[in-house]
Picture 1 (tube, one colour):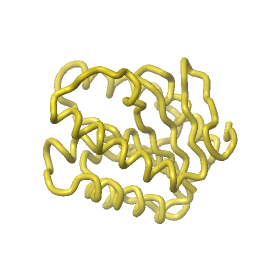
Picture 2 (picture 1 turned 120 degrees about the vertical axis):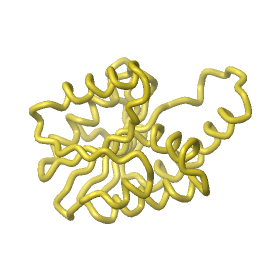
Picture 3 (picture 1 turned 90 degrees about the vertical axis):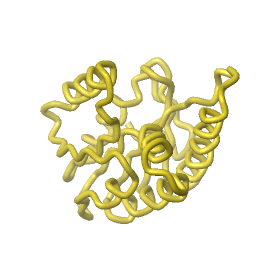
Length: 173
């Protein structure tokens, strides 16, 4: 089963996704994709660690699609991938190659190995600002990957101001 949780920055999507994972039960694996570059990223990582503290997650730091796909995931696992947007950026700006294909393959492998994959992704498509070519390339890659992920998902929930809104598959929580 694949569940997708999307929303803007600071929307509450991570907290919602963590509660959803805990509710499913089983072995909880948190795949963390944010690289600790700079003080802001380190602060966000610390905040997320505190949020999931005491909830029973095993944390695996995996910054690339290959690392995520190689993660120790078992059929009884509920995998929370936090987050697809970071994974795509990591692939684009550090690995090279066909990052869209790599991320899609990673998502497919993870979903086949676990009982449930909960993928968190950012809603980055509605501000309407003009961007440089590299950022436009990233936005297009995210759109392609999110379409793939949403299509494969059993449920899609957008979190707005900490309010979950079911977009596909009905509410899970």
